[in-house]
Image (cartoon, rainbow, N blue to C red; front, side, top):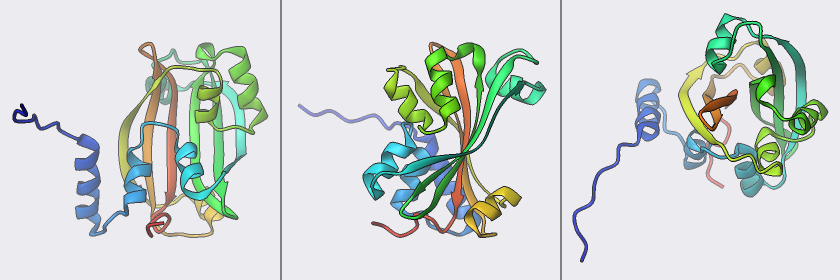
Length: 188
């Protein structure tokens, strides 16, 4: 016997609708999936567009300032790995990703893969069977900075999302992913 169901609040759906109303736009289903997926975005792009590549633009180790220590729930001056990468497919850039990773929470082989810069974060998590979850913190539209304008050759607005990757209650990573608002707007 079927009984009456319970309505489950979907905060991501609500946030996406708010953005659409605020900016008088309508996101495609593909854009909605890319903004709300709690798994690997490169895996989704692989399925939708064929194999994508990762190009690391910048990577370095540095000490966490007060802003990054709060984002990652670590002490100020703890060492973090900073990485900016471009997911590229079908002959063009698709998504820009910037990440901060607390070094003390990374295994040695994970750090080595990060340093090589040939594999996405999602693929690293899968490769080493790192059980984790993603927690989307925000979704928004913003003006592009100089780096995004140059990489994507556009000054149009960008859709961005920020999320945490969490394992056993600890933050493994903070990531921001961005793409031009016109990207993925047509259904495949």
